[in-house]
Image (cartoon, rainbow, N blue to C red; front, side, top):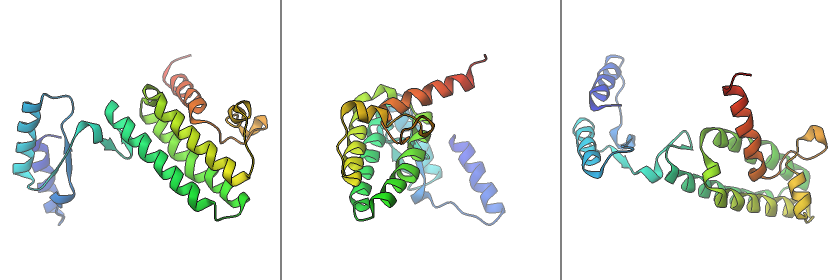
Amino acid sequence: MTPTALITSIGMAEQVGLTLNFKKCEVAVLGAEQEEADAIYRKFNEVAPGIARICEDEATLLGSPLTGGAIEGVLGSKTAKLADTAERLAGLTAHSAFFLLRASVSLPRLIYFLRCAPCWQRTGHLLEYDKTLRVALERILSCAFSDRGWLQTSLPVRMGAWGSGTLWMRRFRVISRRSTVCCPL
């Protein structure tokens, strides 16, 4: 969006009785030199006083990183949230905790993230998430996984596995599904 487009949006919002809260608005200038980015930000700040400036390493849209540097922050925060959630799930029964972890906490959000971001570029962070997920499952189920057993958990349920498994392995399935959807047969 350009400052001119923002002015147009403000005018259209006012026509229907809406106003923008500029203190909750954010702007990120991606791929520009520092001087050019500063000039663009000043123009936005003239139109929308108090608009927040987001650096490239923090730029996200709907939870998905917009730059390579933002991938690390998003994966790090997802890993921390998983660890926090695992602590809370420990207070539930094993069946309930496992169901919540598999069906709502880890899988849907991560599939979205894997489809939207080139996270294969940050394999160290993916492996850290896997380690956190493995520890959480071992704690909930009161059993230890061998390395081979842990890899087998990433198999789909129809193949006799839990379908929870490693993010490291799941990323290949998501990438291959994306390529089959995008590429003609």
